[in-house]
Image (cartoon, rainbow, N blue to C red):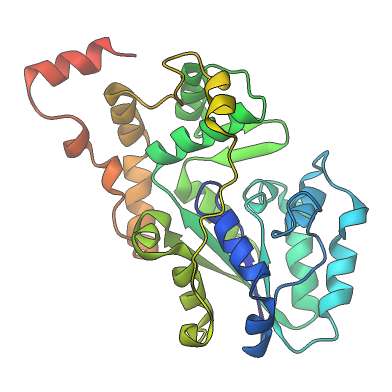
Length: 291
């Protein structure tokens, strides 16, 4: 049976690097029986299938000029190849369950088994890195307000985006779609070697036959002057204080444990409370006083 691997992110887990690699190794992938379709890849971000995610989410950036789901299925229906679709914005599309479910059903109607591949990053690093990116895109919320919303709602919402931070609930949403297999990986663990190599291992590819060098970390950022202009404190992106880190560890520790056990993932080292707060009076005072 043909397979489709829908890489749903999440954001800030090396997605751009992976998409760049997949797009620039299309011929090598095809030689191993895998298609990385052209449809759904917008001109300003041509390596990923973001337009398909935007179509599902009703995102303002969606345009039929970039190829929609109809274009995608016309492209793949006459092929015998397996398929990879990748966009971190599928992370947000999942919350539009009816439309996302219909998207999956179209693969299944072609006799293609659907796998949802998701990489998870510890919530402390994820929160810091995501805020950095959103601020560059125009987010005018304070870092403190941003963290408060995450802790109060287990997610952050801005424009059409919904960024989940409670991973057991998010994965339950993915698993609720009929006939799918959910494949969950730790970005923290994969980053030690390469998320690209890790992703290729999911596909069961002959990695030795694919040119892996250089392995790109394709994260486009503004220059240092542009970055500094977005932030006032020390002209540096904000980071979670020790007290905030402890709040995140408490908020998501139990739900993360469920994810580790269900999907056999290694613990997120940065979410360990014994690492964040030492059992002494000075640290106890810090937790009480630092916001």
